[in-house]
Length: 92
Image (cartoon, rainbow, N blue to C red):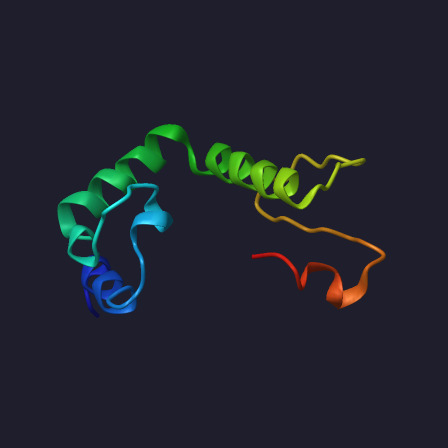
């Protein structure tokens, strides 16, 4: 099994990393063991469920979705629309 930071370096070798991690000018080599460990520590401190709920809310806002029903289970994100499968084709 390959360490997680080496997998990330291979996966993002020819892709823009800066926009992904919110740091302009970041390169694939910045996805190293130390930085990945710091990121995982931050996720642990913030709480994975809290982070997921925050990200899901940002996605919903960006898509213009106004939730009408809330559910306490924050481990999944489901959107039901009347748009069919083509409803999200314009999402960047």
